[in-house]
Every structure is written in C-alpha cells, then in structure tokens.
Image (cartoon, rainbow, N blue to C red):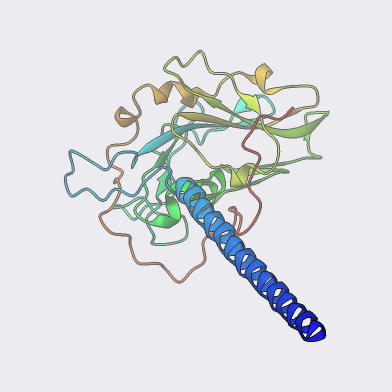
Length: 276
C-alpha cells in the first residue's frame, strides 16, 4: 500500500511539473505576442508622424483656400569662389529652365515640376503628387527637376560645375554647404554648416540653403547670405506672373528619362543636424 501511494504521488508530481511547464510556455508566448504587438503599434505611430510632414498635396477645390502647408518656400544660394551664381535674370536668381508655355515642367519631360523657382532664387514646393510631397521634397529633387545635379562632392548648376579638387584661381577649393532658418529678418539668418550629401536633405518651410565652392580656409560665414533670402519676406509676390502654378492634375509622364541628381529610393539621408 505504501509503495502504491509513493507511485501515485510520483505520477501526480510529474503531471504537475508538465502542467507548470505548459503554463510557462503559454504565458511566455502571450508575453512575446504582446511585446511584438506593442512594438508594431509604436513603429506605425512613429512612421505616421514621419510621413505626416509638409509640403502637402493641395486637395482643396477652392483656389482661394488651398490646403494648409501645400505651398512652402526655401531660399537657395549657389556660390562659386567669389560670387553667387545667376543666369543673368538678376542678382543670385535664375529663370526656371523647364516650361511648355502653360506649365512649369521638369527639364527633359512633360511632367509638372512640384519643386521649381520663379526667377526669385526660391525653391517653391507645390506638390501635386506624393513623389514631391513630405519627405520627398529634397534639395536633390529640385536640382534634378531643373536639369542640374548636386552631391557630397560638388554641384553642376547654371552651366557651372565645381567639385572638390578644383581650384578658385590659383587656390585649392572645397565644397561646403549649410542650412539656416529665416525668421522674418533677411539680415538675421545664421547658416549652420552641414555634412553628408545635400542632395538628400529634406527641405523645410522658410529654410535657407547654401551650396558653396570656396577657396580653402573660407567658411560659410565669410561669404554671407544669398540674395534670395530677401524674397522670403513676401514669397507669393515674387517671380514671373507668366509662369503657371500647381496643376489640378499631373501632366502625363514623357518617355524620356529625367536628368540625374536626386538619390534613388533607399539611399542614405543627409545629415539634418549641424556639422561639428
């Protein structure tokens, strides 16, 4: 009788241990699922906030009341050794090179350019499609649409090409770039040096972007502010009235490929913080 009792207790103990292990496995699985679920929710929340940035597509049918944040402006200045580049339109400004007489186009195509200029040195961000909106509104995209190019080594702009290793006169030159924030006073903007590839820099409202090829030893502070900064005061009043604004629908794409100059999807993003 004592032996049978011991065997019964042993079997009961084994069953209890198995049940405990099964419970532990079940609770562990539930915990993993909860952690994964919470992680996915947090990730989606962060991603949604990152995607929900301007400039936004204008979905308003009322021409007098466009969608908020659907028309942004950033001032651009491209410096070559001792001067701000221009095509002769004005001091440090240029005419947009792509047009069919009715719409502002990406150079080499019949597609609307959601990033363009109006002879004011400003980058007008007026997206009509997602490819030009939000995080896609980069310096490189603007350059590509204009038929130019820029990367971490230099630029090609308005017929001038400058790369690290070139010279300014008899002095070795270097490519530097930076970004500042316009706060209402054209004379009070500080351009902070940046590192990385300016092509992938995500533009913001009222920013001032400077791309400069300068002699060794010269800094962004030495060259001052681009002439286009003053046009941020009343950007809607600047530019050529003959140039069309954002179309209601995007013009069908042409078969020819657009010029190079913007990083392909998946490439690294430029450093959004000031260089040390």
